[in-house]
Amino acid sequence: MKTQIIAVLAVSSVMASPAVAQQLNGATASLAYQSIEGDLLTDFDATSFAGGLDFGITPEIAVGGSIESVMSDEFDDDIFIATVRGMYTSSDNTAFGLYYSLDQSGDLETTLYGIEGAYKSGGSAFEAYFGGGESDVFGDNDLLNTAGFSFEFGVGAGISLGLDYQSYKVEDALFVIDTFEIVDANVTDTALTARYSFLEGASVYTKVGRIRAFGDSDEPNTRIEGIDNSEYVTIGAQYDFSGGALFDARSLFSYGG
Image (cartoon, rainbow, N blue to C red; front, side, top):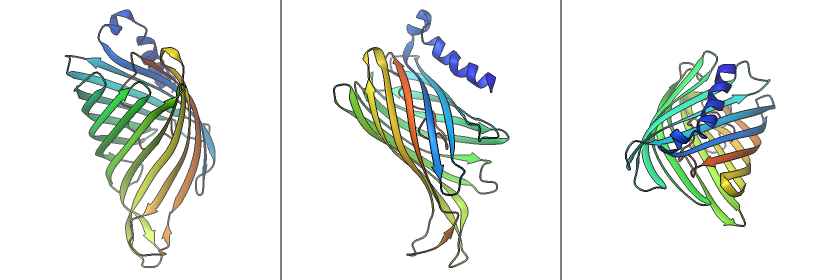
């Protein structure tokens, strides 16, 4: 874990280098505290560190990277996330690209890949992605797809409001008690965001979110084993250098970090 923390801090320190600034499109560093309460999961608190960089190769082509570490006393192993991407920037504030992400906790490993798009300008931002992946977290059950979006819009006086939504589907992960069927599991993470931005790219934010796990069944009043709902509250601070990185790290479990 010390190596992971050093990696996050290294991304943050590179932002201040004058040599890097000449080719840097944007960078972001953040720190967040999360409190999670679940129906089936043990309640726990977590802390996350994250950083991201976008480098311009040409005026239209850029590469980027994001890393995040999620730590809790309740985890056997901390979660470490690393994402790399290539992107086409159609303007200073808009990009479309491909991403590849590694999500690791102990011996459990998840790889995610897909397409994404983002827009960021002033107090407004939008981001969306769609892809697939492979994961050890669900045993022999396949991770079928992942998707999500987020947006924030300024309402004045440095305040912005937003919505985050992430989802993924796991093959044959839940049991229908009424029919004895095995069905796919849908997991969604929905959060409302409020942010206050200072001058020079600094901001503080809070997120209130809910993670749901539910079965893929059209039958009304169906009882499905493994249904779970978790709620979380996140409080964080963020600094954007040169407008900030356009994309976040891609992960199954970030709890609003």
